[in-house]
Image (cartoon, rainbow, N blue to C red; front, side):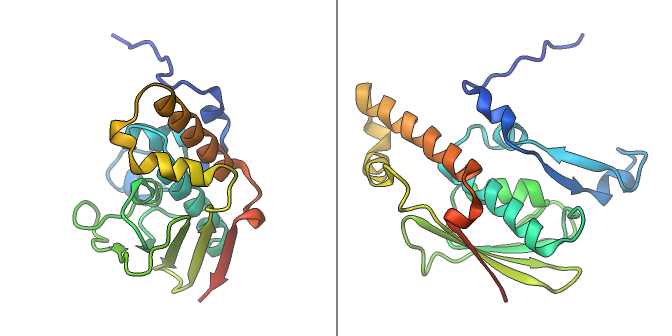
Length: 197
């Protein structure tokens, strides 16, 4: 029996976000793909299914992976070829881990490819240090989203997210989705800085 494929998501724009292209050598090694160089498309909605939702953290992780791959790879990136240090432990870690095929303590042979150090975390800014294992190249992706329109209002609502209801909950959800959309679609020059280390 085939299940009907119908999107569980509210916003049609989720499907309009450009997918990230990756290679996954493990798929060929274990017989899941007939082609060693099979290109897999990872859509935003794939990452949402893995995480369970789209939030600002997931959007940031998705965009950071896209930017890091552009900077570190001339061609299509191979999953499992990265180590990433995050400055917080939100859904951004889930997004980046799913896309890049990295694990902290289970799964592939590349264990320990996730590190979290919240020592210098600042509200409204993320820092990703992304190392490509095969080349030794490293970039720092700095995402400054704290100046986005309505971010302060969003952050204030987020502080009490568990107890929100009525109009406040609706406003929080509206801001969450709009800010996520902005992170995914704005020109990277508007809020992302990249430094090669």
